[in-house]
Length: 411
Image 1 (cartoon, helix red, strand yellow):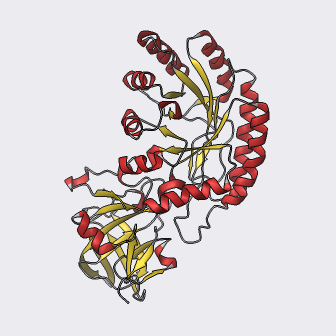
Image 2 (cartoon, one colour):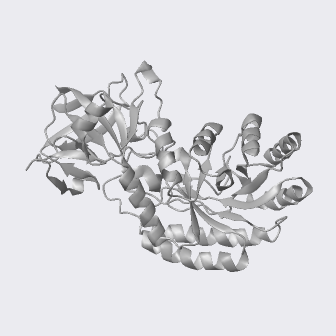
Image 3 (tube, one colour):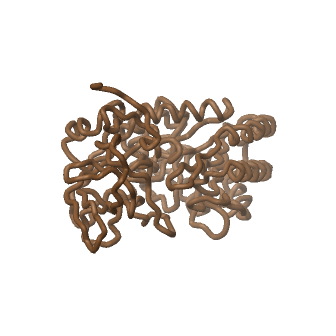
């Protein structure tokens, strides 16, 4: 039947219309025509909204939800999320401009990351954005800039804890790290903050990312809150914000099970009550990026050639790792594994063809999927890489070999 819709496990939460994957309700061939060609990224605004609703349902109502803009800084995505979340966390002045343009109030925006330049610090202070301090030197620079502008910088301390988030894909805390202030050095920094004309905001403590095990997330949150309580005793003022990071992972690979968000929420409910009792002025903040947008996006490219080399079939596309470094296995993977892929205009066809999907670059690293079983595809068919809503385009070497950058659309 024309226009028939169905839901297919292989579609990863997207609808299927007339045998084609649909993004935001638009069948993929029509969307490709609307964009003007391939390759492109497409993000489904309804799935992003659904994910925030899911978080609101399972997390305690007192928890403030902050979006880590670095996960996907596309202005339309950030604009959409400005009406859904409680704040933004930034990692550059460029992201700050996007966040401020969205209408998110500056007092709900924080700026983290090592190596902030004086220009970036000046812009943040002038805007009223809170700094997550990464070092003692950054504190001194921020105070000096604040004096020169006649403004009192708002600043939290980013803490490098003495523990890490077990099982995380990227470990951001524990051991020697370029991120944050080592926990044993934090008391000295807090004493210095009391001497300077800097408004103390609180703490940002983040141990790692991309974790799928609720028990490990809960354990890290417990350690984080306990550490914050200890540090608060040395603080130069009341803790107004306690950012415990996120670390919520999404399933990328075969065998990955989704994070049990309900279990995370149950554990966080008890912690939220403790924070409310012991740090009554503090907003308890969970900062998420990948978990909010990662599963709502796809990367789409077109088959240019179907070729056989020594009994192995290759689908050569107009895309590649220059657009999507992570899918090639060169963005944090130790052993390369396939992201979920599909032939987006042949969702109803039987998966009976084993192929490798490669890009158009002259490097053997340019692999989008290796030895996957999909419906038979020919030149002109559309390859879809799922789980591409986070750390896709902006985490990729788009200038490599001089190919045109892909478009992005929010549908």
